[in-house]
Amino acid sequence: MPYAFDPRLPYATTIPSQYYTEGHFLDEENRTVFGRTWQLAGHAGQVREKGSYFTAVVGGEPLLIVRGNDHVLRAMSNVCRHRAGPVAKGSGKKPVLQCGYHGWTYTIEGKLHATPELEGIECFDRADFSLPAFQIDEWQGLLFVNLDPDATPLRDFLGELVSDMPENDYDSFRLAARKEWELECNWKVYVDNYLEGYHIPIVHPGLFRELDYPNYRTETKRNYSIQFAPTRRPERIRTTGADDQVRYFWLYPNLMLNVYPDNFSTNLILPLGPRRTLTVFEWYFRDPETAATNNALADTIAFSDEIQLEDIEICEAVQRGLASRTYESGRYSPARENGVHHFHGLYARDMGLIAG
Ligand code: FES
Ligand SMILES: [Fe+2]
Image 1 (spheres, rainbow, N blue to C red):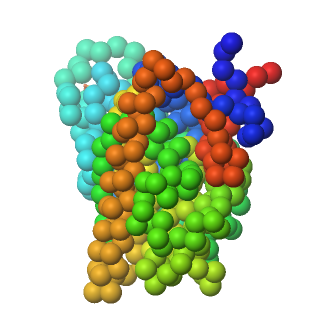
Image 2: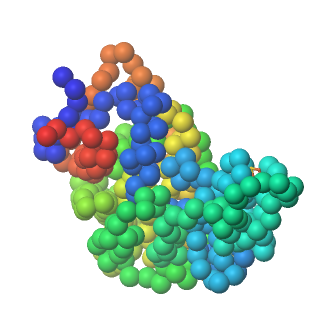
């Protein structure tokens, strides 16, 4: 019997293990999941000035994010129209970009500018060789790209997330720290793990002591979910608003937003291969340069590191378990794993795993 996702949580079985182990599913995910959703590509601070750019990869697609001399923000292909070389590397600020293969140049707005040693070529019009553009939009200082020209606008995709985020002037927050981790597991192992608090008592004893675990709950919305984590000692884990709750937001398929009163952090989960994942953590503070922020940042990162190391260990063990000849698919805790089931439902829809 082929697998079909059951939208009824009490009856459902989890996504079969081969989706976590076999390479060809990643190619399919790049088309149907990463190729159609709004993906975090960077932050507005990276392209504030005219002529500034940075490179990114979304769904396996090399991208160039620029602020044109006309001040327009653009996401373009970072693939040269000659023979597919890299138009730009890293980040910087330049009036024209020179391909790293044979030196064709492009304006910062993506128009083909100069083509050395092309004398004698026929039927060639530079105007036909501009860099293709993709949809890009900004929210809370974060830059999102969508590779699908028919995708719904970013605000529609975010839905009520825009109003569910606690009120704050996030646009004024600045990047204060960044940390990358590489894991030996499929990207979905890490996302599944993030989406439930069920493992906290076993995997995170330190965090467990800080939380009012019985009242930990997950709310699922169309393209995102929120985990509400009531704290026992709000002074240790600084909370949002008057309700002493930390809010962990997740946006389908691979972005987490952890929101506190004076800072928020993003966790971006990127597949490097079927069994290898990069997690990028970035912390944004209102005043990154002050001593108070430095102390808060050091505390925040130390606590995050402790939890991340515990999560990495369990995720890598789970990846080995998923490869076992004895394991195929599991079940969900109705009380504790509605967030995982919600993710799997969106994933099953995009991967054609829903019956009927
Ligand atoms: S591939 Fe870019 S100049 Fe040849
Ligand atoms: Fe965890």
